[in-house]
Image (tube, rainbow, N blue to C red; front, top):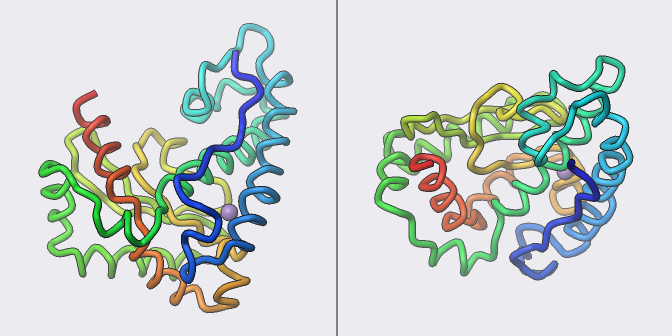
Length: 211
Ligand code: MN
């Protein structure tokens, strides 16, 4: 039975993403926003795992959220979604030095070439982020054959709810960037590309494709 989920350990120091994101944003985002979703989810878990319904992991809950009773389903979507989304967001990010020294597998490198070029990937990713109206997320998703695609989602939604496998994500809720960029979401997205944890993304791709 799923209980007492905890905040992840970041792979970087709170100041390690400056000047992309300053430590105050990291602190508020992790210890206030993410923590609030986590507390809500932990309070909800005993209420939704009843009458023979049990979940083995956060991913299991998201994939099988239709098993949650109607009255509590939206709260489960909102809080489990936001905990999963933020976990993946923190895994997606790393220091500039780590991002630059990452070694992608040849399989993942080839899959990324499916966009035509890295510049084309960045263009499509940025367009997805800018065209997401209001709060939401941008996703890199792989299908079972290792074909990559970019998706966006609103609020707490994510591709895993719909049976697709996310590899990385970018938070475009205002709380992710407002202190550093105010209304300039485009500038936040431009800087994001320098801090992607390609090692994590490539390793995740290899695990999902060979699983
Ligand atoms: Mn967020």
